[in-house]
Image (tube, rainbow, N blue to C red):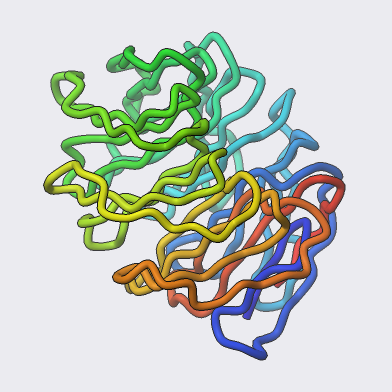
Length: 305
């Protein structure tokens, strides 16, 4: 099945059902399934977060606390919290059951573009157009550390599976690896010729995928912190990338209005899906790997499953 927000999306298996979810009034910048797969969260330039039932396609709730575009939304590993980040320079932590704001994290001086929970859920990492990454104590909302080094806006962040490092991607065309305990910069990965857009870590933690304005994806070997291969085929900026839960597939979404499905081990292009009437801003796999949800932009603000 496919769930598409803001555009047509891609079915993991050919001939699978596509469901359209309509409600957002702006580009859908982020989509995320809950750990049990029973809820899909989406965030948008319309300043809202929407919670959907993936099985029926029905809208459960709309959250309207943010004052500007909501760039990212992510469920905590335990599933009890939802974090959202916004152009209003804040991160909000929501109780995933009551949908009430637990606390608001303030400190970034520009738009907050993305966030990621540590595996133990004790820390939240966030990145911003202020060129920093920040680490927050989830229980108290206290700022633990500010990481500086990027020379342009930072757009994406992922947490390692053991929680000892994070990777950040920025418009300075670099990926930087940071020690979460000391704050030290461990490595800088270079090779993209365009601004970095998003990062994804494979389920077993061995591979890191990056997408860029240079129309390509790159796969990096985490242990060696080195480039492995480039994936070429998109004809415009690649805005989103995600690994399947079993690590076998990699999905990418682009301003060329397509979603592409790749073999993660070989880099072979398996399928190109057309149908989006605007760019593919965001995408994610369901926990069982049977559904891909995508969010569209460029005038296409529907949601599809």
